[in-house]
Length: 369
Image (tube, rainbow, N blue to C red; front, side):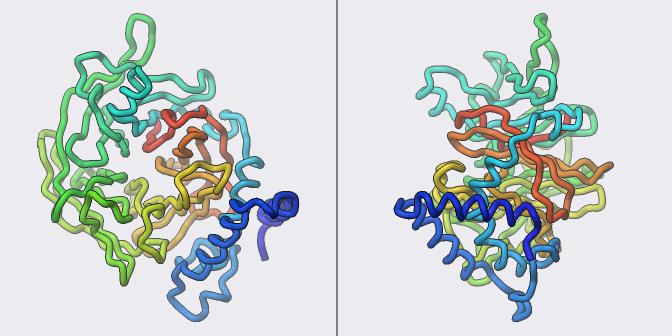
């Protein structure tokens, strides 16, 4: 039995499908949902009896909610337009964007790499000095806050991570000052899509992983038969300039297929208890949320799915250790960025609020300031 939200969402979708059932795009979406339901893994025969209310549970539960996730995504996106005040709880977040030099050239301006999001001002771009190495950053995909109040943002190719501090200029605008750079090693070829980087709470280890989908430019640590991906680690040091990887964990992904659009590790955090939390994002056609709604799954290193987020491609994740609330940031391509809040492990739909529309504002990492 689905919860009240899903009943409303599905009623909305059914009505819309009746109105536009002759559109090939809709037929394609419905067929994808049916196919996906069949292809999501079930680890036991009893999987078919698992219902949505039983989440959090093993990934087998996803076989029953996959169709709902895809079809209800459009309805959910419309039903969850909350003000920032209902999502942020008075907190201010630093977010990172995955803009690239080639995007700067196309736009004819330097696109934002960092920004602050809060209830009072909404979105505030962080200034990057002209001589900063961040000006040349290419595809920042992760963000970490350190105990000394500094931050680390890493590129997806692992070739550059930037440690910086925030300050205010004479106009009280935020500015990022880089004081250290380092790189992450990648065994076996070029892993060009590292989307999750985390440091353990005791600062003893740094973790990173490929996003877990095939890429024409990389040799992906993904076993097509068992659907396993690797998390790498190294002893952490505040003065190291390069980290040599060792396999720290082998994670079973929420997806049963090796497909470009299925990202098993879109972000990665380590809880105070040492649990690894990852968010997986399914974006069937990489076109945002209107034509073909994506969805995201928060899962862990214990082979459990904890949260289902419909209608958003989540790439940034922050866990409040005091409240156990998850704060999530989306990169919905042309639809831009949204922030969401949900209790870790809750079957409830998260509250979400739009930040800004536009591909340059998609969130690929976030931390509380």
